Length: 475
Image 1 (cartoon, rainbow, N blue to C red):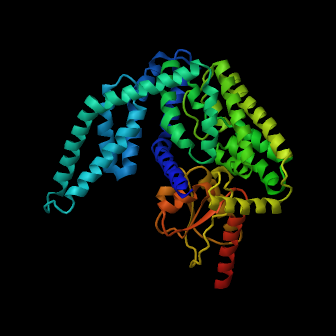
Image 2 (cartoon, rainbow, N blue to C red):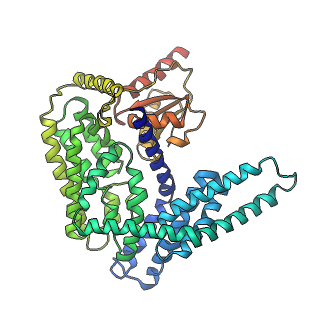
Image 3 (cartoon, rainbow, N blue to C red):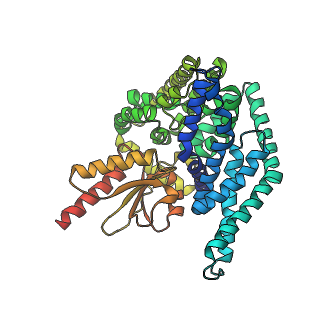
């Protein structure tokens, strides 16, 4: 089981790395999407001159931004520059938008630059630092550019072509809804970014460039299935799950933070069946009505969907979301109504049972366990809420916890970061229990508090009470 957990943590970290390349540039992707939706021949406001921006932005601007950001994650600004230089060779040498190539060449170029700098560290004569640093970056960048243009680019084009052919065959065979079998379990295990940013978004950008829209942007981001699950809990759930589900609906469906429904699936793993069927039904609807989005909706909010829907696709997109919600609600309502769990005490017992199952190596989907580290710590001076990208659920949790502290006149700094970017001065890291292994590996020795629900959680309450008691003792 430990090996499986470490593998999952590494996959989550890989997904987080992909997210770190894409999310900071989502504004540029959305800008490109708006220009496409508005000004191409079939757009809302066709404009031949403005439409000329579409191809250069997707060919040069967006891949270069990804490559620079990926390089910067690896090795700061110097890595970012190396990544952009290396990626431009791919971009110029290919006849397709090199999103996948940029995700590879950007970090690879930065890693090579970092290794070279480590090799010559402390060997540079005094006074020659600037010239050696500048020329080494220029020379290595040139070599990487030539290499990517001549060899790496053609290989990536072939891989991209093969992947596209496989996906197209799946689509032509009418089997695209089957990807829900992979998407939904991956989401609740926080592995969705590996698939979304690594596969669907690059394919979606290529299809959107050719067709002005793409269904790939919707196969994993549809908020309908999550809405159906939370509605089922709101009507037929019990205890805290029933109380918190309505609030979770607002944040999930309108705010686009899908992490809100993950704990509800983990609490009753059988509901993953309803999620898969709901998501698959939504994909079927999108396919039959031939609709798509012009760019990736990030976050996956209904508002993002509507904003990025091209002309003539509004009804089909809304129907796809509604069908996913209806199917998910109908199936999950049956599971929740027939559940033997009747109150919070039984839910607590199920948590303890899951904890024991975890130690025995049972199914990871049933690990609804309290993994909070009990650490006798000094005064808490900085609390960090951490998640995959450091933006969605962690930002929401940090803001809510900060307001709760201020309500009792306690000013303890609370911030939010991606798991791999938590500052070293943090005293406590708060994260979802499914991200515990990854948080522990990225931040060894740190106190980690795991939670299951960002709206109301017993471990979060315990942390709050601890801070309040600490403040009272000082007074």
